[in-house]
Amino acid sequence: MSFSLNISAKEKMTGRFKSRVNRALLNAVTQARKERKLTQSEIAALMEIDKSTLSRILNGRGNLTLKTIGDLSWALGLRPDITFTKVEEPAGAGANSPAITSAPHNNNITTPISRSTLSNRVTLHSAPNTASTISGAPRNERVRVAN
Image 1 (cartoon, rainbow, N blue to C red):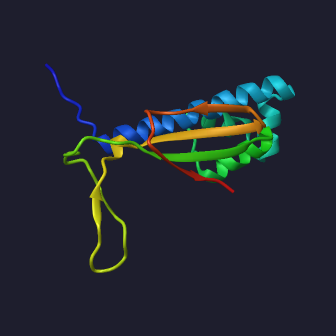
Image 2: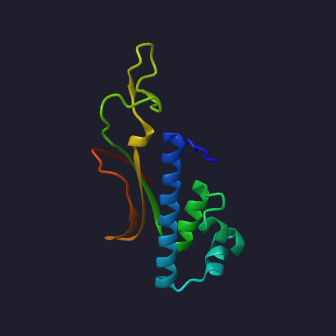
């Protein structure tokens, strides 16, 4: 008996992104705990959540919202930073390519871009020249979103 599991390019990219974000958070927590000598209970108290809730978040089973990332970053003395990167893909991106519309008028210009061509980079900064960084494939164009 055999079966096939089909995962769309969108689901694959989203899963990998979530994995990279979780890894970056774990690395940041580990580093901050060593540097600041914080316990998981102390971090949870700073975030005003239960230790078990923090444990679920760090194990990838909790609800990882932007607020949660912000609260955790604040508790660790870090500033979250996210970069969205456009990656070149050969012509004929395929059926899993969403169309991205560039103008809100009748003559919309539409460019097919496969989500699988996008890589996401998350950086948690703790001090100048110090960061826990993860990144994806080679990049050609970067758009930075930060406060």
